[in-house]
Length: 255
Image (cartoon, rainbow, N blue to C red; front, side, top):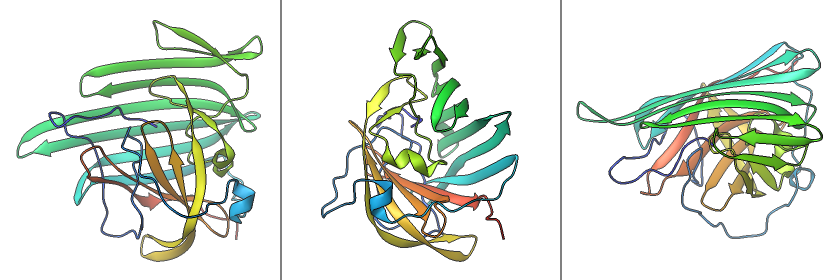
């Protein structure tokens, strides 16, 4: 979860796409209005029937997304996951610019580096420029706790926590997630909704659709039904505009 609530004065970065079929909209990496869906949902990853297949054993997996606000491209968000000894290293970079005529009405820059041991976050360092508001968050496991600081306040959290790690489908079973921009542990519910088809570079991929609901946000995610690769993300901002991550590159499967 990367972006703060945006006002009418500072329009939110949002995205939409021409080439990806993403059905029901929900807010994505911004703090958005909750969109409550009806129906009965599976409560766990296992209940949803999503299969965690073996992905290509590689020192690097990369996701690259174009980011759209309604029909307008506003930037990109890239994720790189690599091995670092016995740990995984995740680096993400996001740059969004919302322009009105020739005026840059909203500028967003975010970089985050995380280390993971199995499914537990062991360290995090993030920096964010949200239209001139700067955030710097650091955290690491120390003496059996995860200690996170924003430079002013320090908080002690349980030793095994997870962030909004969309790239790792196992996070779909989480009930609390660390916001890498604010350093706050947020209570969430994550539900399987339905099956869809997502277009990735002209190829339709059968997908499972999930929605994450937090206090002030709802994010819709799609994962490939066959192997649980993360495919896409969508949301609605506070002003009703569609935010969408359109996949340009996703990790390959082992043949």
